[in-house]
Image (cartoon, rainbow, N blue to C red):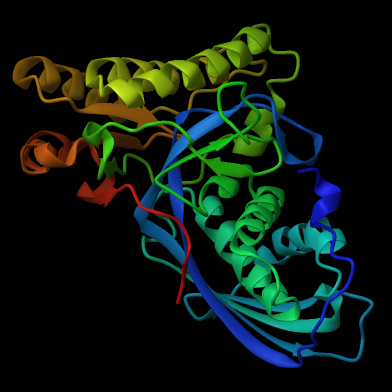
Length: 359
């Protein structure tokens, strides 16, 4: 599909007032995207596990208004009015208005909350923007009830991407690919698609324990970091590597090879941070405790032969990935050896999930 297909010709019904409530999860990339073109287009494809517990629940109440020249909304996080978010939401509305021409006709009351602490260092943009996008799409489906579910999900992912790139991977699960890739049928730079390959039982119900090393604001935002890939001396080779690693992962998921999975995922995490450390200006988002945890994970894996590995987002927190049948041993390891490296001893237990849910 191309983006013009998401522009509605007309609506078959009208709405005066109503309310939509959905929850949408975060996700953790296995093959990372770092670097983007204009209009939120990724420089390379990525693939992620959709999470389950770490999610945002958003309600959008709407009513017709007389002035249709401007966007009109109020936003509450955990019941508290948040005017500091208005610029970001306005930018999102401006980007999606060509595909949702009804937006200026309504006043919106947006109420949102996270299942995880807002300041916990877990990126909430993926869950937050996808939850908001799916509420608007549910509203559009009321305006056009003939819309089928495939188109609904695809357009929601497309809109989510315009709010936060990785948000387009949160609508479905348990594995989602974003970015055109030769080996993934239907893959696109415009939206995420469910991974189309065979997945071995080893990777079903995979666990993600998130070790919260640093809950503070990052010294360099992801938006700035993406921009530093322009002119980066290793950028083109990195983009090629991402394509290669998705092809490798497709074979790994089919075979169930946990050792190959761990090696690829950890390499991807370290490559992401290597790109940050070799950009100009360069920066480091890992903290000393990030490295302490990584080294302890390696030592634990060598000592026990339990297939636990790590990955990192663009930050200091560590995601520990492992099969469900090792959950008890790994959580004991977290509590006895790793929790001391977490800020205030905080960590989150999560697992793969299956996307947005109507509430």
